[in-house]
Image 1: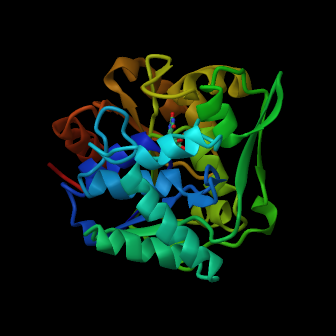
Image 2 (image 1 turned 180 degrees about the vertical axis):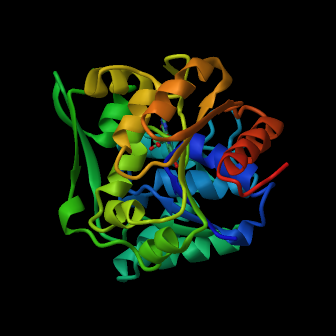
Length: 312
Ligand code: FO1
């Protein structure tokens, strides 16, 4: 049994943390978003891939859901004193990863090769693939102008209304080695509970990825990142309202209408199930909250039950 998961930020990492406790981690391939990668203080940072690594390795800062738990920030304090960028929080241990990655990328190695080694050295058994080794970067149009992703998200705390989203470089990007095979060959593809615009669509924008998913015969199941009209974390609810008309599981399903076959919505949204089924999906309401490990396991189990991979 093989599962391939499209994954963005913290919600996806928490979902994966449950999934690898329910199925053998070796059977899981993650296709991760790289469009929120940034260069800062001369370092290449891949927040979404690192969040998956730190979460599955059990070293993530648990409240925020990103970065290393219990780490110091001496390097950033000195950088700040010297007038360097200090708005993006990089802790000392995290910088160690960015140093190694940046050096290897500068030597010409692909991101996928670097992250394969990083995942292995953190003891992970899943396969972690960036969607692409090529540079794709998200830009968000706001009333303050077009902002690069981390300026919109971290520096301005995603307070601006998103009027449009663009994935620069996507049209020239190629899927990283193994991505299309993992999507075509999996018993199920899972769209993690991630922001459609900021986490999933930048993956789908890489030529070949969306088409390969749509051409599957097997199930493609999404877990709704919206609970009772609200995002658990981040701006997905506000972005769905401004860019897709409403913040609901239905609106999320609408973003994936060309390939989605199944959808898990939160128990609070059980009344959405008939409307999703009217769209031709198999849908179910179940737990989707992932604050605890037990919650993450429950979400993973419900997702796999919905696509008949688990029977109990
Ligand atoms: N998120 C923040 O809100 N503020 C930060 O300063 C910040 C730093 C950061 C450093 C490394 C890393 O792996 C993630 C970091 N994040 C930070 C999270 C990240 O910006 C977002 O969660 C994702 O890019 C969105 O998926």
